[in-house]
Amino acid sequence: MFDLTFTVDAQDTTTPLTLAIDQMVIAGWTGRDPVARDKHIAELQEMGIAPPASTPIYYRASARRLTQEDGIECCGGDSSGEVEFVLIGWQGRIFVGCGSDHTDRKVEAYNVTVSKQMCDKPVASTLWELEDVIGHWDRMILRSYATIKGERVLYQEGTLDAMLPVADLIARGFEGGKFPDGCAMFGGTFAAKGGIRPADRFDFELEDPVLKRTIKHGYDVTTLPVRG
Image (cartoon, rainbow, N blue to C red):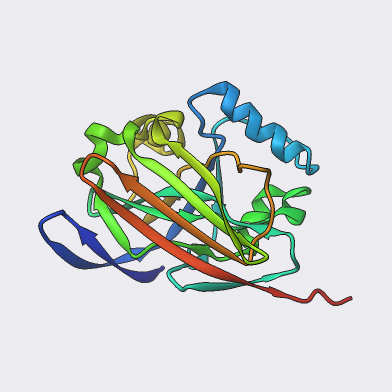
């Protein structure tokens, strides 16, 4: 277990909140539309990554991989980011944030669970109360930008109506359909525009067009040499 400090944005006020995180879950293949879901599966199959055993599927990784830093280090040049909404449980409440499931694609080709453990998972420092956004959840937008060789390009974009509803995602992944305190769960992603590829920098955001606010974060990627 370890602590992360966030700012809870309640529109008319912001409040610092330190949360004890003791588990991280990465939900995959959470698409509501089977066509879009299968497109992402096919995208990964082209890279030699086997299809999932089930959809959705819930991977576990060390909670300490979560970071709010503006840079991460990865071994080799085969990793890339994915924008996702993040749910965090605390004292019976659920908060919504935004993160990047940065993953080593070379490792993913032979073991997805291990690949989820290979890289830090950057998360933004701002959270919203789920109850404040659940009424217009499907209208919210996930978006990411990749900076590759100095050029910043739109990498992913989509509305949350393309993904399983929150209640469904929780019911399928947790006993009794109750989201546990201290759990941070990544909720799935969209196919990359132009295909999955590494970047020197990755920026991501969750936009609420109804309440007109956005959670943003970005990070640089330092590639470490692989010896031997």
